[in-house]
Structures are given as structure tokens and as C-alpha cells.
Length: 170
Image (cartoon, rainbow, N blue to C red; front, side, top):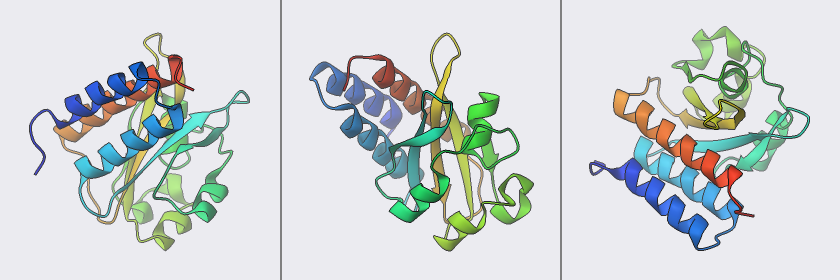
């Protein structure tokens, strides 16, 4: 069980990493791993970033296989596709409790299902002026929705990603 303040500790650690000059890639990987610890065993987190052309690219997904990342590379934000593309398009959290029951996954569901995932949710990474920079997604091996604590926690981690992306971390 997580201690109270786990997400806040991860947020503070992120700020320390930025201050100490830790590379951006390393900080983003740390944040995905913090989200995985918070969500529990068997979960996998991914940070996708919008490139200059407005396409989603891998920012940090240390526990997703390369072929999966290749298959989703270059997704366009679209409110009717998956969780990350939908979250990037809508600027709000998108939850898929069950890949089979969600039509947004019709063309892509075979990808996470092949890895044993049942559902996912994705939080947009947003600057204070509401610019979407990417998404912070988490995949689950069971059907479930996030608790209020998980939603507010992942929102805090996504805000930490926004700070990393807009800071001088390289």
C-alpha cells in the first residue's frame, strides 16, 4: 500500500532532478516508474509527446516493447481513437475500463491485448496556459477505473512532466 503523499514525493523528486541537471529522458522514465508503482503490480505507464507536426511520439515508455511503440508512433490526436490520442485531442483524462467494450479502440485494441492488458487511462500533459504537450498513459492487466486518489495523483505527475518539458532539462 502506498504511503500518503506518494505522488507529492514523486513531484518534489522531479523538481530536485530538474535542479540537479538530470537529463529529461531520465526524469520522464522516473515519472513513468512512479506511476507504475502507484498503480500496482502488472501496470505499465507511458509518456507520449506531441512533436512539431502535432503527432504523438514516445517520450518515455521503459516497460513497453519496441514493436508496440513502433505501432503507435505518430498517432494523431483524435477524440475517437484510443486513450492517449483521445486525451491529447480533448485535453481531458480519458478512461477505457475494457478495450473490448470501447469503440475508440476498434482499430488498435489488438496491440495492448496482445501484451495482456485489459484497459487503460490517459491524462493529458498540459501547460498552465492549457497547451497540450502530450499524454501520460497507464495500461492495466485487469478491467478497472481509477480512484479519485489515482486521478489526482496522475494529474500531479502529468503536471510534473509539463514542468520538465518547459524547463531547461535536456
